[in-house]
Image (tube, rainbow, N blue to C red; front, side):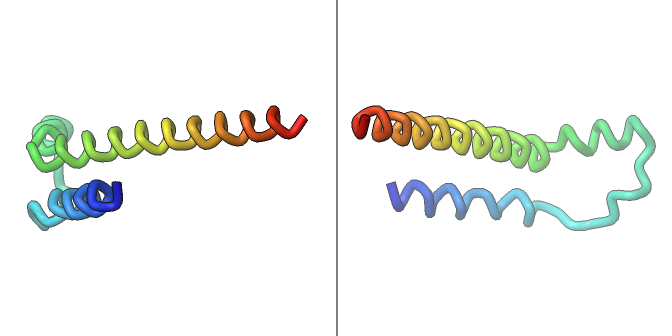
Length: 73
């Protein structure tokens, strides 16, 4: 599990290094095209996946805590 977490962190840094530049001068069509570039789509997918995994881990921890409380009663 430790190596999976390290691999995930290593992959999360790569989209940020895809390109640099000023993002302030876009019209709406240019902004849509820019957001649909592969590096932005990959970053969004990583963010969504991270959120799902964090939510599931929280729910699992909450269920364990409730189970422990029920065992103590």
